[in-house]
Figure 1 (cartoon, rainbow, N blue to C red):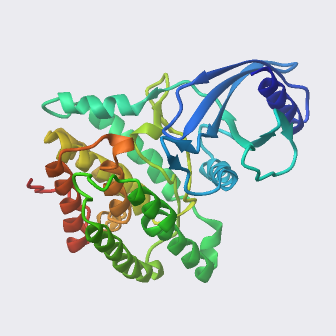
Figure 2 (figure 1 turned 120 degrees about the horizontal axis):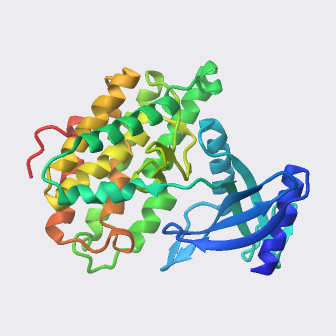
Length: 357
């Protein structure tokens, strides 16, 4: 850890253009594919803390689907796009137990994304606690509305590329591909289902699922002419929302998709609530989805957001029955999840009203 501390210290001194002392590094819980650290730092004027994460790209046999440096470069820019609560401070490249000032793509090279560190409690705790409630509380509603307003602020910012219509459409379509039919994502995950898995035991079923995804993709491309290109969070769900000491939400882990349809973020967030309702049979999750969606529409005026929130559902459905992430669900639950997603695409709408299971 001492050599890593020295590497951070050298990088930060170069980045901030002044002497920085890293007095301590402590590892904290990371994500499914990442390790996380807090750096205690000191300069002549103050003490402060920074957050850093590195991709653990082969956990449980799961290989990170895009190159790690590109992933962090995208994330770094997305933090800058958001102009939010947390400032990103670039990527440190670590090889042979030292900081190197140039990109190296050797297998043993590590990349550390560095950001401000801000104390917060995970919104995921409140998200899962809804399963124990018989009704949604005013406190639940207030937080959902705060989250909706904050993500709406990001989505309604003007994207500079919007002035170039053709390029904006290209970026918009690229966003679809990254989240919906990226073969590196879908095929890699499909390949890791055990042949005896409760739902994907039939090879033909997997092929049909992929074929349907591509059919919907063709339909979505036509939407690029009528929908606005938005700044995105890119991985917008409860785990990436923290609550600060003043009970206000802030977002972390901007990643993967810098631009696209706002429905990519909203469908990912609200879709998780609906799928949790399918798993738990607790109607509070549907009530929460409605509260959030109404608040978002009030803030943005986007009356078509329910239609375009179907965009990430194919991928969301697979992830929700992917054993390494959420465990191996009962076959009935897996079928209900994918049947719900199929129904959403038939109606071309994220269904949160009159959902019968």
